[in-house]
Image (cartoon, rainbow, N blue to C red):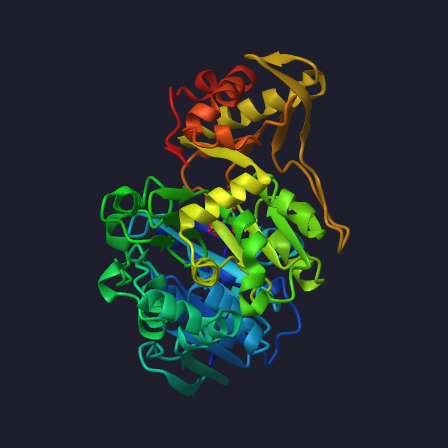
Length: 542
Ligand code: G16
C-alpha cells in the first residue's frame, strides 16, 4: 500500500558542494529525511519502473535512512532498487553500480570525511544516470522543490533484510541486496596490471592502508590483501564503524597523523595510503615523503600510460580551480586539454561524458578518472601501485624525478573551521569589494598581478557558475585563493589556498610552510583573516 503523508517544508535543505549534509539530529526531525528524498524524486521525471541504486558509508543512521529510501522508491514508482549489503556502498562503487546497471540514478548516503555518530554528521546525495553527482541545475531544482513540498509518498512494508544478498519483491518493486565490493574490485582489475602489482608486493614492497574505520575496509581487504597479496596486518582500521572509532575519517595530515608518523619513521613501509568515510578521497605517503593531492594528480597523469586502462594516453586533464597548477604543466607536455572547474566533483561530469578529459583531481584529496563519475580513493592507490611496479622505483624517486622535470609547486591549504558565518561572509565581501583595485598593489612584499572572482563557463552545456572563489595572482607566479567551504555543518569554514612554483631543483627541499611564507603573509595582509575570524592560526593545515 502506498501512503501519501502531509509534510511542511524545511527551510535549510539546500545541497552544498556535495549533497545535503547536516547533523544527525537535524535529519532525525520528523519528516526531514522524507522531505528531502521526496524533493529529489519530485525534481526528476521518467523513472517509473526504472532502477535506483542505494547505499552509504555505513555511518550512524545509515541503515534507518536506507529503509526509508527503499520504501519511498517504491512509493514513487521505481521498479527496482539495488542496495549494497549492510547498506554499504563506497561512493565510487555506487557510481560504478549505477553505470553498470544502467540505473536511473542513485542515493548515496554519506557525509564523506565528516565525523559520524548520534550527534555528528549525516548526508544524502543524489547521483544521476552517468554515475556522477547531480549537476547544479538539478540540485537547484531539489532545493526549490524542498521549499514548497507538502507531501511525500511511501510504500508500507516490513524492513528489508540488508544483511543477506539476494532479490525480493515488496511494494510492487524488486529489491536486490548486492555484494558491495565484487563489481568494483572486478572493474579495478580491468584498469590495472594486477599481476605486476602482485609480483612487486611479493618481491618485498610493503604497502600499508588506513581505512579509518570507514567504508573502504572491506574493499581494501578484498583488493589489496586477497587479490594483490598485501600484508593483512598492514591494512589497518579496516572494520567499518558507525562512528569511525570516534575519529574524523578525513585522510589528511591531521586526522591520519598516525599513518603519517609511521611513514616518516625508521621502519616505514614503502607505501602508505588512506581513504575517507565514503571511499572517494585518498592520501598518498611514500616512505619519508608526503605527496600533496595536487602533486599526486600531476604525477598520476604523467605516468598513467603505464597502467593498462590508460595505455592509449589521456584525452585531457581537469582540476578544480584551487588545485595547484602542477597538472597544467603535465597537460602542456602531453599536448592534451587542461580544464579548470569550480570545487565539486559534479563539475567534471560533463567533461568526462564528452570525452574531454580522462583524469581529474582536486586539492581536497580527490583523484579519479573516466572509469566512474566520482573521485575514487582506492583507484588512486592502485594507479600509484601500478606506476611504482612498472617503474620499479620508490615514491620518493618518482616525486623527485617529477619535480626535476616539471619544477616543484609548493602548495598548502589553511582552514579556519567553525568560524562565525556572518564574519566569514563579511571577510569574503570585503575582499570582493577591492578586487578591481588590487592589480599593481603590494601585499606584504608581493605585488598583485591580477585578481578576480572565479566564474566557470561549462564548455559542454554552456552553464555559468559564478562566485566560485577569489583568486589573487602575484608577480612571479604565486597564487592565493579564498573560498568558503560548501561541506561543513557548523558555522563557516574559510579555506585559504596557497601555491608557489619553484623551477630550480636546488630549492626543492624546503619545508612547505617556509617556502610559502611570503604568500601566507600576503593572505593576512589582503584579507585580515585574524581580525575577521578572531583566530590566530588555522584549525587545519594540509
Ligand atoms: C566534496 C566534493 C569535492 C570538494 C570537497 C571539498 O568532497 O565532492 O569536490 O573538493 O567536497 O569541498 P569544500 O571545499 O566545499 O568543503 P567529499 O569528499 O566531501 O564528498
